[in-house]
Every structure is written in structure tokens, then in C-alpha cells.
Image (cartoon, rainbow, N blue to C red; front, side, top):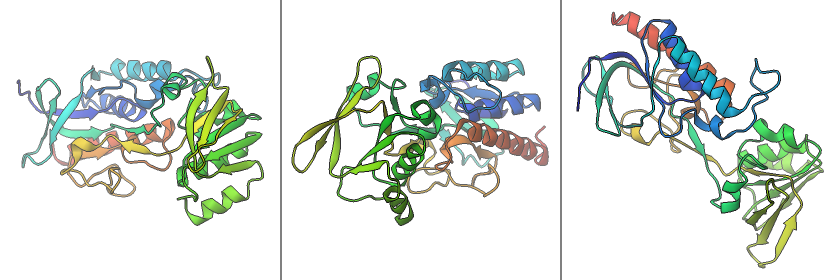
Length: 315
């Protein structure tokens, strides 16, 4: 292992939050080094079309958009490394923090920006994976517009599923909400909204058996887990709303997080409970989860990191 001199700024993650943080940090002469992690570009690399990010009037593919983010970050001097950070130590007792790559390389940095994001939970069906971005989605706000006037299904029983279903009901001709129990886990107010949507039908005790279609979703076959009866619903979109898992496991024991793993910090800032460590993007956002909000918090993290370096006399 090689031990380097402490870097001014090290960024863990490469979605909109990570790359935006890198752009701002690089322009502030912080010479950031960014580790992409196992999925360079983050969740947007699994999105075929992005139409709701300002500046792209004709839309843009998710992978292409992230490639442009990367090029902009490198243009200002960001060092991008296609590696995974597998271990951290934020309790060195020194003015820098330590991380290790998966290959065992040890690096030090005065500031760390966490932008590891979150991963959508899926059902695990082969057809679900095959038809991802071809009718299967985990974000109604991102992709619902493509199914306006059509029939869609949403799977899930919590607040996220209820919110996505009611959102889609305003765009689509009919929404089927597939709930595996005989009741919703969603809050009372969300349950009322579901009931008040005339074109939203709830299927109780219902699980997904198979998503049907060749190149695109054409229907979903569901099964009643009480009777065993199978039914096909003629939907064009299938939205999975069973939750997200923040990619924050390596920070356990160092950074404060809620019971589901989302990082918590000082409200209105990107600061965490550890000096010099800042968080951005979906690793701390379980409400909005949009590319533009992630980018905004990436900017905040870089600005907070720069101010920290100045206050500590490290620049």
C-alpha cells in the first residue's frame, strides 16, 4: 500500500452529486480526486431518457448526460478514478481522514464528500431486469410522462407506492396498484388520496408473477396470494415502488444515519457529525431523489468543504 500526502478533497461517488461537487471543488483549486464506485455515473446510467433536467430541451440519455458531467469535471482538473472505496476511517485524530480502495491503496484527504447515492429495490424477476427502461421503472416522476394516457401498474404498499400511484393517475388513463397484503402501509393521508383517485384500482393480496412483453412491457401477470388465481393486466408501464437502499454501509460507526441508512447531518448544510466530511445526493435524500436536487447538494458540499479548508487554514 502507498500512503499519499493528504488531498484537499476526495469525493466518493460519481452521480450528479459527485460530479457537480467535483466541478465546484476543481474550480476552487481544491484539486479533487473522485472515485466512481461500482456504477460510474450512478442511477442515471440506467435511465434511457432524461427530459426534466434544465438545459436539455430535447432530452438526453442518462449515460450521455453523465458522460458530459464527467468531461466537465475533468476539464477543470478533477482526477477521476474508476475504483471503489471499500473502507474509511474518519476517527484518525488528525486533520485528515483516511480511505482505502478495494485494491488496498490508502489515501488521506482533508475533506471527504460522500456522494454514494442509493439503489432502488427491485422484485428480482428476470423479466423485470430485461425490460428495465423499456417499460419498467423505479421513478414515476422521472418516467411517468412517457406513459401519459396509457395504462400502468405500480407495485408497493407504502407511502412511496401511494405517492407514485396518485402521481401517475393524473397522467395515465388507469393505474393498477399491486399490494401484496390486504392493507396499505402508507400514511392515512396517502391512503385517502389513493381512494379518491377514480382511475386508480387497488389489487389486494396481489404479487407480480411475470412482466410480459418482447422489447417493451405489454402486460403484467399477477397472482392473488390467497386464492392462487392469476390475472393479466394490459399495462404499458410497470413502476416498482418498494423502496431504496442508501449506499452507506461503509460509513456505519462513523457518520450518523437514520434507521434505514440515510445519512443525517446539520439541517440546511451538507455537514455531517464528523468535521471535514460532507454528504450530498441520494445518500441523504429519501424525499426528492432527482438528478437536479442531487446536483444542488453536490454544489453545497463543495462550497462547505471549501469554507472548511479556509477556516482550518488548509488552503
